[in-house]
Length: 331
Image (tube, rainbow, N blue to C red; front, side):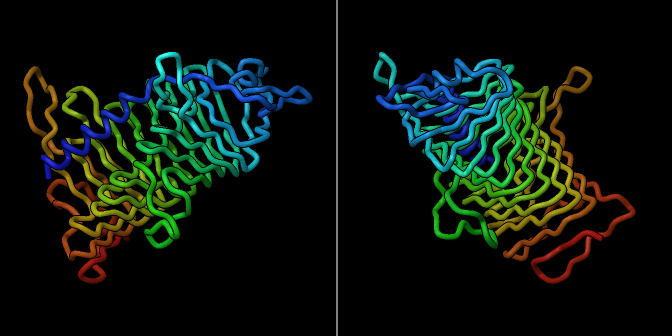
């Protein structure tokens, strides 16, 4: 498990490191509008946009767009922004939309952000995604440099909603979300991943209040990538996570579960390597991750216990009830 975890983590990290640049493309017709003024590229509209305005997308475009310190809304109007424009080196930029520090952007669907590699990079800025579809060939949504993102009724990493743990009518298109440094809040919608639904690196936080996550291998993956001074944080109050392993705390991390349902099909519903090295009083020592359970339902179709009970905190006011060979719940 540890070797597999490191291979998957390395692959996700490489995809993340590739998504650090963007530029704009240009077409021959008007593609965006602010008030009565129309623009030939979305990047031109972004550059001209006053704070608190609304940019209306008029048509499908192929363009990579970078947003600086501004506050505005983009209405996709059922159109698609596809990345893949090239710069003077003839290299396709890996991110379709980049939200930089100081930007506060609301993205309203219906509509699609589709990346040649990654769809959206939130690089220190703030993004709210409402009712949109976000796709990429590698990762749908990346968050770095203390950025924040909120997902409401959106599809991240897949083209149809998750029903009973499956994306009906659609294969997963890429991995869902990577939170390198910053936070992701998931209120409703669906997040899907070929391998991973949500990956948390050091200084990454994920707050799940609802919605559905499904992935081929790991629903939520907490990993410190051998960085000793920071650990990822996962808080779940509602929603569903359905994967081979619902939650993997690769090397430490801190998770709190007070509601929702986690389903693991391949092995344990919750897994923890408990091998995080942490600097304590000048010396390194292997310590377990922190998992606090006050609610929720845990389903393991293989019949495994959901976690190592000696490593998990369950307050005395609650009880872990085994309903059958595969289902546990807290009451």
